[in-house]
Amino acid sequence: MLEKKDHQYEKAVLVGLITQNQDEEKLTEYLDELEFLAFTAGATVEKRFTQKMSQPDSKTFVGSGKAEEIRNYVKEHEIGTIIFDDELSPSQLKNLEREMEVKILDRTNLILDIFAQRAQTSYARTQVELAQYEYLLPRLTRMWTHLERQRGGIGMRGPGETEIETDRRIIRDRISLLKEKLKTIDKQMSTQRQNRGKMVRVALVGYTNVGKSTLMNALSKSEVFAENKLFATLDTTVRKVVIGNLPFLLTDTVGFIRKLPTQLVESFKSTLDEVRESDLLIHVVDISHESFEDHINSVNQILMEIGAHQKPMIMVFNKIDAFAYEKKDEDDLTPANKKNISLAEWEKTWMSKSKYPTVFISALTKQNFPEMKKMIYDEVLKIHISRFPYNDFLFEYFEEEDA
Image 1 (cartoon, one colour):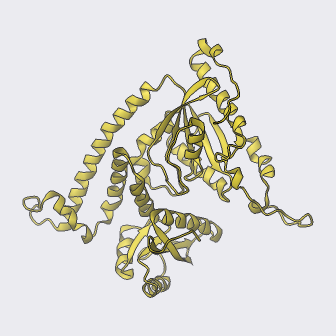
Image 2 (cartoon, rainbow, N blue to C red):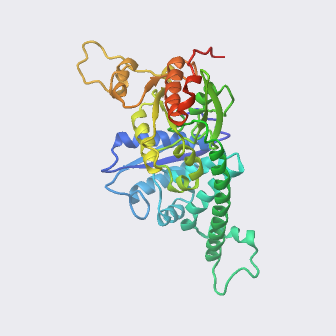
């Protein structure tokens, strides 16, 4: 259970399903992540409800008996929020709100809420607002009639137009406005990227909370906000980094996550363009997380979706200082599993046979940093020589002393 302060956090319960596509072990992983998301958003989880079903109920996601059990629990324990692990349809959301009489959130809505909290710049706030409106549009109920006041009701309502239709029209207008605003900013950012085109561009990518910002700070000797919460940074940060005497641009990007809302992928297009237009990717992985292989697959899937999966890449397995395992007894003949494989054994598995250069580090303690820096230097130099073949003799690698 995550550390909590009851007077600051909302009380919530989680709901997930065991289906033919998602067994109990996988659901537990997803609910662990959902609890971390809830904690990041400002909620403390009191209980988890799970049910085995072939597919979600079209009306209330869970069966009627489980729905009654959840309703009785939240009423008895004065819980204000129920969070579902999958995206709810508009009708499911409406039925659940009416039946439970508390706030209902799904995984998408929760992630959008965290992004809204984390957005610092005008650009990030615009991206998040667009994603929120696109999520809300098909889910409008009468609770959204307050939007009418933003436009003024007199003279703005067509003959026979209902309040809900007015709200939908206002949101559609707002979506159009936000898209135009983002187009303008995207053009400006594209111009900025072109102006940086002469230098080799390297992008840090990875699952959320794997230590990308900590690594960025260590490599660039600058301060980028880093925190042990999901999506600690949303805004793309670019820093000039010099390894040996070879300069390049290093970009810290927003973390990826399983079941990433499609609205966010679209609205964060420009942020993802930084990845798509980079010359080299540094894929950072939290080796201490028991689901790190799933995280790698999720990141690779998103890279494929945005057309960045064929770029040169370095695999950096971070947080070896936090890696722990349960050593097997010598007479234990049961097959090895993720919990009792040592770091040395992991290094001899598929990782050592990867087509990408691979290194195991700790961004916090800077363990194995010289090996990683040499690896980055070699890959950046290859790109630099292919682009500027006439001045490759200018660069020579030498060891640096970390400050």
